[in-house]
Image: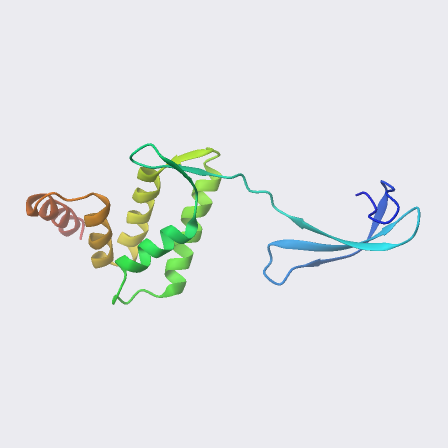
Length: 151
């Protein structure tokens, strides 16, 4: 680590502490040349993920869009915010762990439906009706029958 005071390349770590949110480590360092102290922060580097939409347009991955979609599907349903946050965290982790730089909305949508199905059947059907763009009542009933068969 380069000293911000004198530019010397060598320093020693005097103190390390985790940040309050647990996403970074704060390190106090002392320059081995000028003995001045400075602070550095260490965080995990995450690769930018691009989402490929149905029309082939591309956007940066945004976990808030997933959360908002799930919130709309769970409106007036007994699903806690913590359960939704956990589901979004799991989806985001699977996207990051896929090691793909580009991910399709189909991949994300299927994951969202899987998580909603485990949380609440009504929320699942609400999300699926928008995501799968049911054209008529027959295709909607097919999806409902699938749920009933699984129970």
